[in-house]
Length: 292
Length: 266
Ligand SMILES: Nc1ncnc2c1ncn2[C@@H]1O[C@H](COP(=O)(O)OP(=O)(O)O)[C@@H](O)[C@H]1O
Ligand SMILES: [Mg+2]
Image (cartoon, rainbow over all chains, first blue to last red; front, side):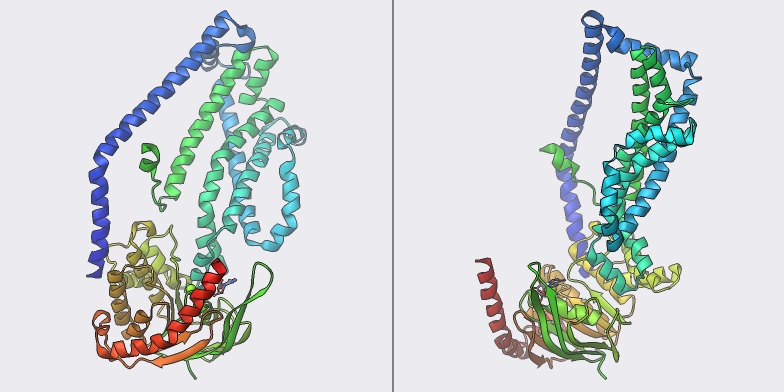
């Protein structure tokens, strides 16, 4: 009986939302269409300005232009590159980035959560972590090529090192900001320390961790490419390096375009993963935010 | 031996400025099995702290807390605690939240879920098993918290202003249901509230606490017959008589809390 009361309130709420939402929905859709159109217009305009200015004003030997970049891409995909089929190079870079990403994320999450839950350990290690974080880590790529050779390992390690820190810091913060109330409640209900870690600390750090994974994959790609650029037998970084050495600006741009596509694809996967893992969260109030 | 005994329990906290703040001072209180004790006092006086001493979440600075004959060191067996603010896991469904307690206590998953379903039905949430917390109203969330606590069959039920955030009608419904559910058990209840009407409606004894630091000022025995209907009992002359008697004791403390609170703001 009492339940009916609660139910009716939620029902009336949803009813009003959907009634008022009709026209708002249409406005939303029109707004979205406008945004997408303007995005395309912007892209076309930038490419057109680049193409025209480099045809008539500047030297396209240095600055290249979209049509040349396109031609370079066509050549790579149809005739292959100086270091073999383009797919071999893409798959090399992708593998290095993905392995580095996975390993770096695992290390980052585990050490972030351990330090986030252990005050003594985090206080002892804090200055060292700050120092390590302050190192310009891209430079390590050179060292890793010396240590691990031209093969995949040196790139995976570079990517791992770049991925580790953002994931670590977010996992650390997430593990620290766990609601004490939730922990106390769980302890009263019978949770052991391990239960608290597994059922409360990890899930509440998850949204922090997932947020860091977006930037982290970008770092993984950077790590792989910088590593290849420093010395490799395959990969997009090598293609960019080779293009640079032969004064082929279009080749550098073409390599960048492929990297961008890889990063955006990964972003789609991570977005889907995030939505799946965080489906318990209340939906963001997107209508309110965009309508105003 | 009484089920719950606080013996000259005192609790001090470090303040942010480095001083000591006494939240609870020399509180002695006993609660028997099956007894419903309400604790009233002005907001901020130290009621929640008193509950945390019984639950073992905070150790007393002086004095002792004893539950079922054993001094409280960790969380005692048989304690259930409904917190003042929601403490359910937002990433678990209603079913997942209610089944959590039994599973953490070693009950097999299927069995824990069966027990959870039974309690979800008893608190009137059948059909909402797969909802997440943000999809529920405030009253429904309190029902989840109640089911989550009761599924463990606590012999001592600590409740910290569980219904204060609810609207008047929902609160009365929840109070009635609490009395119904409790009457099937032999649990001791310590129910903290700042609402005197609620305290008298529900309890066998009402403990009045002083303004900060919390000391026990008076204890009143409420001899209203059970079973009680919370909405009807408030109209009876017996209720009104005991209400004005307890209010005599409580109102001066509320006044003190108000003036010191006002001074602090000013
Ligand atoms: N963990 C804590 N650390 C420091 N001070 C606290 C803590 N818990 C409560 N207090 C202080 O103790 C006093 C009593 O708090 P509380 O027991 O929550 O009051 P009530 O529940 O009666 O409103 C308050 O002044 C509060 O600031
Ligand atoms: Mg309180």
